[in-house]
Image 1: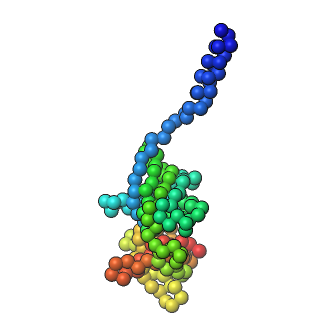
Image 2 (image 1 turned 180 degrees about the vertical axis):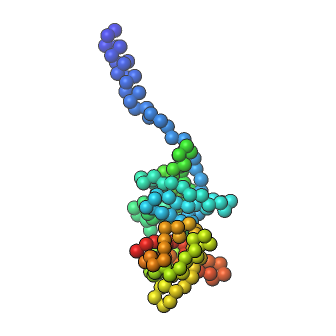
Image 3 (image 1 turned 135 degrees about the vertical axis):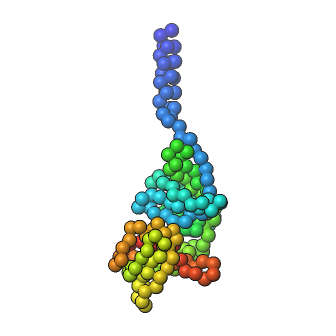
Length: 180
């Protein structure tokens, strides 16, 4: 009888240790990446209703590429950028993303990404309306910045790198801006 009690007690302890302490409540969403800031681990995603939301991302978030899988052999969060269309899973309580599935890359990966990368110096900016004037070497040029919130951490005189995307109507829009 004593050995049977030990076996039962041992099984109960094993079951208690194996059970997770807190289970996450997972939810799913989808949308197009508008911008990503991997220093703050945040990504802005436009949902199918055209609403843009900012999402926190776990540093160890899983990234899977369904589209152009061979172009991203070791996928990681820093591979995620506009205009990729993603399905993502997040903790419903904390709203922190823990998994991305890239369904549409949205650009030719052989060309390194959407748009043209340029380096320059900010000569003027207005974060309220989302415009930046940049000297790219041949004089200043003014661009719309989308999303405009990217301009909040910049000032006149900053050396930057911008990604310029051509949108409908041949208008050039800065979709990414980084300090050099």
